[in-house]
Image (cartoon, rainbow, N blue to C red; front, side):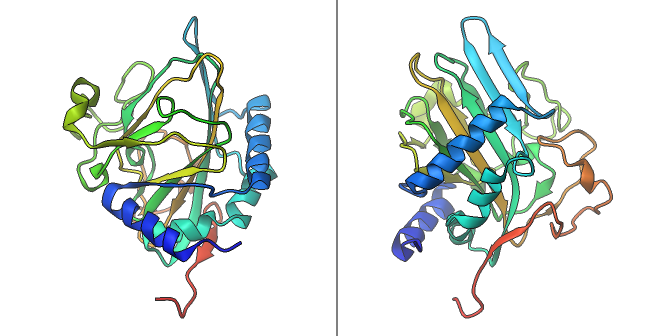
Amino acid sequence: MLPDATAMRDAATSFQRDGVAVVRGLLSEGEVDLVERAIDRVVADPSELAIVMDEDGAGRFIEDFRAAGRFSEIARIVTSSAIGAWCGEMMDASLVRFHHDHVLVKEPGTRLRTPWHQDLPYYNIEGSQNVSVWIPVDPVSRDAALEFVAGSHTGSWFTPRTFAGDTARWFPEGTFPEVPDIDADRDAYPIVGWGLEPGDAVFFHMLTLHAGGGVEDDRRRRVLSLRFVGDDMVFAPREWKTSPPFPELDRLEAGAPLDHPLFPVIWSRPLDAP
């Protein structure tokens, strides 16, 4: 079924203005089942890129990257669902490339909060046409969902830090300003967020400041986050290991378009489209 054109335009308006938009019922029940199966396979067979934060009394947080090459369910969602068309509208792009996938699972009772951060500084790409699609397969309460500072995608880059240990492992200290202490004065910021049902999704720019809450004792929060790039995104080599790493790109020159088999075009705008 083709996406509703009016709904897409409305969501794109929100995305361009706020750096984030929610889309209800993005995936069908069958597509949600496919994503759920993919996430469970990743958790059962994590890759060498997987990170597990397991703290006594604080729960367990599991994340893994670049699983589309190992599990066909993720590749099917990327190429066969309407996600590509939605991303093209959000970014106002003529083409959409798949960049990578990120599986995030918070087990019941995981009180670990994901701190405020931007995604783009952790990557080895630069440009303005980008979008992450955050897709839960479990009901997510407003308190456990991601929340965003609306409009922050148009501002500064902030120092990327490790979530455990708060270390500036990427850009040297002082390269960018620090993320402001948003939680100390939440009323001073235009914070937005939504409770979500399976099939809903949140689209957000890779520079939009966002954070995530812990989960309730009886709730599991399984999420597939898909990252896409548009026309103006280029390669930005780093001297350090990015998250996720792409060692296959070691010979790509700085500023090169992301025209590479790792980043297939999954949607393009029809030639006669406005």
